[in-house]
Structure formats: C-alpha cells, structure tokens
Length: 111
Image (cartoon, rainbow, N blue to C red; front, side):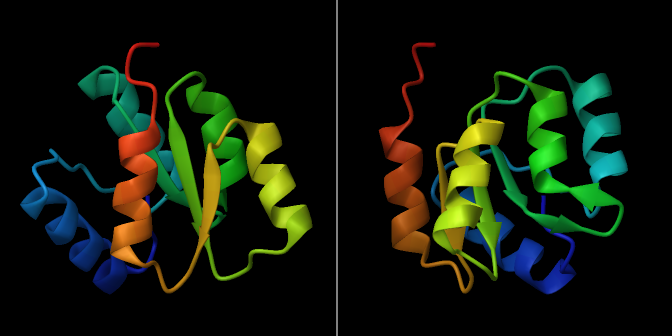
C-alpha cells in the first residue's frame, strides 16, 4: 500500500524478485476493495499517509493480517501508534530493502 507510484513500482519489483506475489493499491479504498474480492493476503505493507485515510486505520480494518508500516516519520510516538494498530514494526523512508526482507523473515507465518 503505497500512494507514490514510483516507490510502489520499485518496492513491488524488489519483492517480486525475492519470490513474493505482490498486489499494489494507491489508496485505502482500493486496498479494501482488493482485500474484499481477492481473499486474504499474507502481509500488508502500508504507508501511514494515504490519500484517503491512514495506514493505521487500514490495518485496523483488515484485522489479523501481519503488517509492516512505512513512513517518512519514525518518532517513538509513530512507532508506538503502529504497534498499537497491529503492525509488527515501522520502517522509515527511504526503505532499506534488506531491513524489509529481515522483517518479513521474522513474521510468524504459523498464526
């Protein structure tokens, strides 16, 4: 979930090359539509600032799906808000792909 098309394209490409199936959405509304029609996803990666809402709100709406938040801001308050919403962590932009891969590896996929 990234509203900047260039960042979404690069991140999607890197994740696909790493063997992941990627679906992108540029807004909270579109992400919810995709989730409702495509069935459950394994992971949500979402920016906190979306054109029509918040990544925090999206995570709360999508429920138990594992999630990684990304943002240009990463204060302790931002991190705590992400954890409270159910994200496993917050990555500051620009995203280091190695850090993202590490977070994905740490997800407990047995839940």
